[in-house]
Length: 146
Image (cartoon, rainbow, N blue to C red; front, side):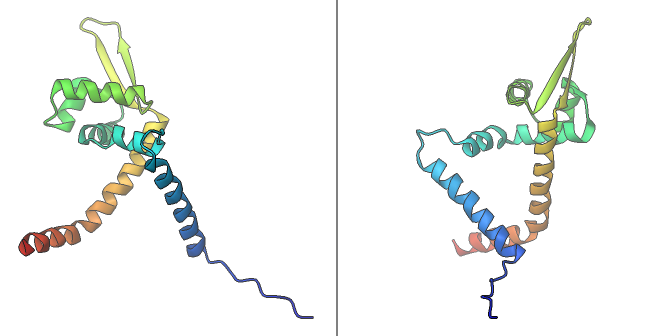
C-alpha cells in the first residue's frame, strides 16, 4: 500500500511562519492610524531612554527611592524622571509605595509585568552589544560615502 508522504515541517519553517503572521497583524494594525494599535502604543510609551533606563535600574537594584533612582540613571532631570515614573506606574510596569513619614518616603519597584519588560529589554541590549562592531563599521562606511 502506497501512502502519500507528508512533507515534514521543520521547526525553523514553523517559527518563520509564526513570525510572518505576527508581522502581518502588526502591519495591518499600523496601516490605519485612526485605529488603535497596541504595538505602536506600547513601543511609543517605553521607547524613550528614561523609561528603559528606569526599568533597567529598578530591575538591577530592586526597590529604589526617587533620589537613588535619579542617581543611578545619571543625567535625567527631576521633572523628566517624575513624568517617566508616573507613566510607567500608569501602565503597570512599576509600583510606588508612599510611607507616611516626615519627610515622606517613596519607593519604586518593578511589577511582574515590569519584570517581563526588563527581560525583553535585556535581550535587546544583548543583541545591540553583539551587533555594535558591525553597526559602527556600517556607520563609518556610510559617513565615508557622503
